[in-house]
Length: 234
Image (cartoon, rainbow, N blue to C red; front, top):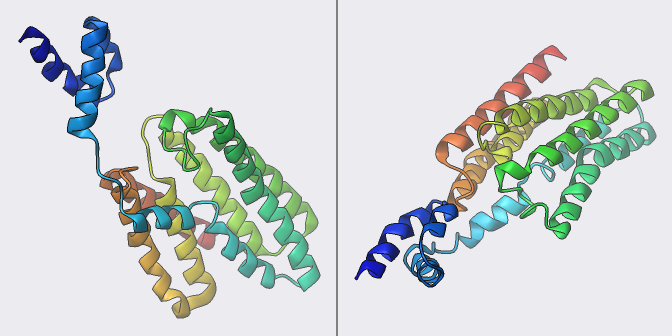
């Protein structure tokens, strides 16, 4: 009976990740706690649609179409293509390559970097790469639109990094919101339907249990604020 009480009592500790508390009980009881906790608290699989949305509408992917649009606004197609390559490498390829490499090495749990304490190094790599990209584009004489996108990426990364030190904010929501506002600025009323991407990705991240509603809302606020600031000031 005492052992059963131990199992029931310590299941709560296992649920909230306080595994160190389990050291207080015997090895056999600890194993039973693990099994019982998994049986009692194992969550249902997230909706398939939410997983697809999270994979397709992620911070690195949403930048790609915007960069193509910005390249088309350059003085010439050849110059636009060159600047597009620079931006794609600096803002997408370098961060994505680093993240994939770290996932393969096991230092990052997944491609979405779900664990907050694993986000510092990827953010640093993204920030450094964005700075280098900004400098290269500035020296190569790119048009304002491409620079605005890079400035926006740089500022968003800085803000998200600052918040991430204390709290797990939604990168998906921030990047998607910023991309949507920028798309509206570039294409006007024709792009109004893309506004639906903001609640869609917010729902997906909550359904995936990757974020709370508050974390998604704050991500939206960051993305919206950065987009308005960059588009109106730079």
